[in-house]
Image 1 (tube, rainbow, N blue to C red):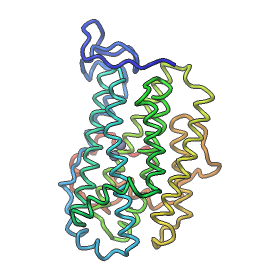
Image 2: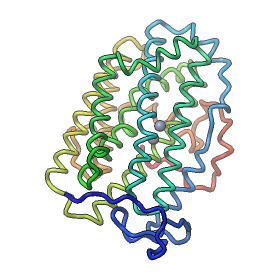
Image 3: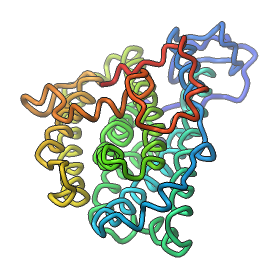
Image 4: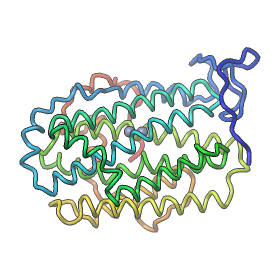
Length: 345
Ligand code: ZN
Ligand code: ZN
């Protein structure tokens, strides 16, 4: 089992363009015109193009609307925020831990921007909660992950997956942790996203959904970045693309989808009018297939090749100018000439 070497602070003997994504040589100097991977700079531009902060979002309408939601809607709303707050907190730190072992200054730079975006996501949860509930309720929401059995089960699935790598950083554990990462950023948020988009579709809590949309947009880039890292590590270390890894990948996506469906039943069940749990299940299976395929694994669910929640695409593709459901304030940051299309849906 090959251990991972830390990226050195500075190495005058090594080239600026690194010799390997992991365990390579790199001066650690960042010159965007002299980097190992041609996709790194376009990714950097897209990540900067996504820049936003919660301060841009006016919460006035949501503040008035929140008390008018049903009890179930309010409970689900707060539970989802509690879940996202835990996942984004862990993610900020995981990004830094992976970055320490990437022997390439440009990929370290991308991971720092990714981590910064996770910090903004966490800020948005505090921002929403401080607008709509009391400080003590807000504090409670940030503690949900400790006591809600369904959250504990889901979160431990991810954190145990990360711990293997953090405690024993070798190539195999890095690859496996990236599978959990793609589940966190590309699957485990999706029942929650669907819940908020469903509210927005009914003209409820649109400011919160605007933030959720920005988070969704960031997460799609993050999944894409980890997909690249995963593939480059295997490309440079092909002996690690084993049958065991393929089976592990497929099985892990399958388990994750079941956990996400269980969570979806909890927060959506039959009580959110018009959002059929059956469709949400198929949507989650569709997303699990899509993510498994992105990492080069077999699809865990037969069929499930099309998105059964067609309306959701409009909410996720907001940057392509197809919709104007959300408040538009931060759109000025994303230049129309940039390649910022959503290739994920
Ligand atoms: Zn995030
Ligand atoms: Zn992310």
